[in-house]
Image (cartoon, rainbow, N blue to C red):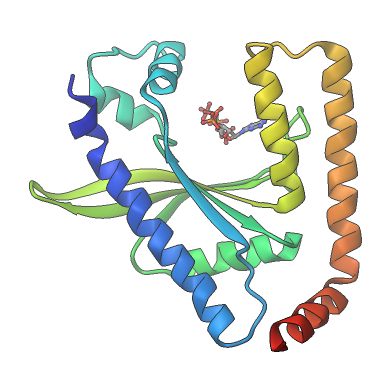
Length: 205
Ligand code: 0O2
């Protein structure tokens, strides 16, 4: 199987969507308005991880069409925001776009995962023009605050270290850390306007 060829439309989707989401951020900045987007990252799932996930779903590792119809996060984008309500602003703005369509939404903020994980997930269909014609690519957009991102990246590293079986006492600490991170988000939200005014003063210099 030629992975590079198969994954090319996914790489293109990520590159295009990063440009578009960054443009949204730029427009807020040029109008001197608070941008609900702090930063954006994107990645193609590594082939090793695709194959591991495919094996977990009993999919034929040599059938890319079968794999791509079952895996929704081969193309992944992450939008990181300062405040929790920015997340819902970003979701609303993405909902309004005419160049993609949302096929699934998972709000792991209102209902966090057992691990403590919080984030808003959108599964989207995005059309990519290729030399073979139009290809509809499925991508996952994860939208979360800086605090949620800090927690998730540390928990992800620990999952990697412990090969998915984090010891119970560390899991418990992580759950507590997730609550502390959410408390931080709540507290920051209460002084959001103060913080935004401070940023405006700084930007004027
Ligand atoms: P990676 O390495 O980030 O790509 P599925 O995608 O079928 O396994 P589900 O429930 O359909 O599972 O999808 P879900 O849980 O909505 O989204 C999966 C992705 O969300 C994960 O991708 C992670 O990126 C993130 N995620 C979900 N739960 C957790 C969690 O408890 N901790 C952290 N750190 N991230 C989480 P992958 O493929 O698992 O990992």
